[in-house]
Image 1 (cartoon, rainbow, N blue to C red):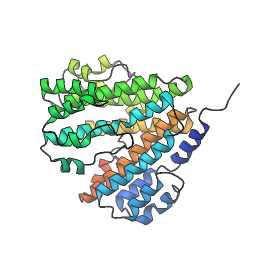
Image 2 (cartoon, helix red, strand yellow):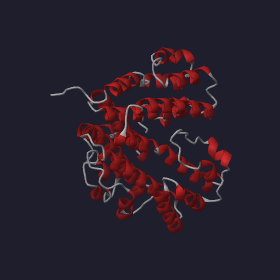
Image 3 (cartoon, rainbow, N blue to C red):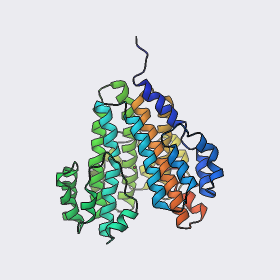
Image 4 (tube, rainbow, N blue to C red):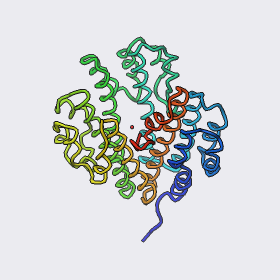
Length: 360
């Protein structure tokens, strides 16, 4: 019987990088003062990690320059991604590359929002479009110079997002409501992510990967069900149409059709896991609920990273946590640039006592 795990090199690389993730205490210290000294010990521990230099540069240079910080942190994340992608091939490699395209989806939505707000191409760029070279497939320059959303979606006819764009264009022409168009794009992308996770050939790699992918999709379903039903006041049928069927019910504890029928926030949350229910006892408002749910997903990702025998699942869990680290560091710098009080910044990145989470 062969007890040797698949991808021993990848297991080793993930373990090395995981040991370099910043603890919450370091992020809090960064938000409070952001001095080089306050982070130096943690940074030294990253010396063997591919993303180490990016964090070092952020601390050494003018940290009020958000665009430079965002670009530097993004490059550090991409360095890690390329290191972890290198030993993979076939459906496992394809899964991670497809997941990375979430940033192109984010770029697409950012351009759409900018167009609707009447921003110039340069103003949209300054908001922080993600560069995922060498995997870019969106014609960003062409999209930024289009006149409106409908033309922008037509520009995607020859891209990998052609079917997604056509469906979004039809929705836009009928409803002219951005959040429905955004939900349509997210729906197509997430359904594709689940399909690719199911397509992993090795069952030992596939099962734990499916667990975390389904959890991400359930998080999407629950958070957006809350928004659609109680913020946008959509009907159960309209809400169901915009969510991802087949994601599962590990998190929600109920079928999707039952979830959307809830007539109150409390009723929608009553079947959540007991540990999650306990954390939500004193939380008020959908934003606070979202933060707790997102932190719950991160906790599960940490458990998978530390305990799983699947190299692919551990890699994916690491990337989720590393992504959150980048988001939080960039948001802290942005908050400082806007001269926000520290407690507002901490609350915004869910590091305060009032909340705990953030990740898509």
